[in-house]
Image 1 (spheres, rainbow, N blue to C red):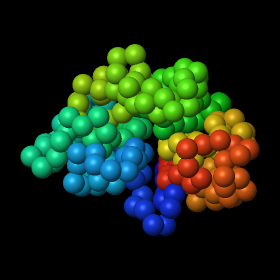
Image 2: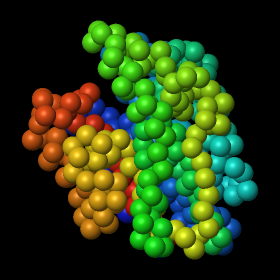
Image 3: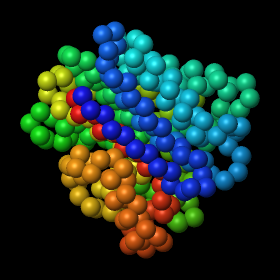
Length: 265
């Protein structure tokens, strides 16, 4: 087994709001990986004194422990437990009812000799390389489905339109303070013998495919294997720097926090 990871903040002057951690299999526990992308809060009060980076680290660490300490626990239950424990850690000092209370996208996997389980919530991506060499992306595309509707709104209303659909029944979901959203995640399992590798990337790396069109998800995976996580992030940074104003490739910000993890099983 070989695990590689890299993460880089979008701006040197801001904390990295992504989180990544892995656990290798042992005689008493399964292997696991967790990748979170903290949702950057708009400028101003968002009801929490701790910040998004704190939330991502707290939720991610709690989730990894939940995955490895109770191998029989479903991934959705592990995520719900981690969300509730993290909420309890700052419920007394922060307004968790605030719509932009700290939150994050989630990718997590757990594997043993028999099977691989996975969970994806919101717009980070999981790439499963099968033993045949085929790379299958596992995506939660509800935010992508919402974007065309947002672009039909007047420019000044687009952000508000998306916000109104955040953690709403007809919208998209992120891990915030409500453990019930764990049941909304995309989940699945595969026989271990069918899986050669797992790769998890936040949308700051997913830009390679989804924004800059440098290749499809299979090509992104190939670049990740050949160049390593740091090399893939460097490719994204080069594409961003070549279009700093977003004129050719519109996006919310020039650079985003970027994280990639590759686990060759």
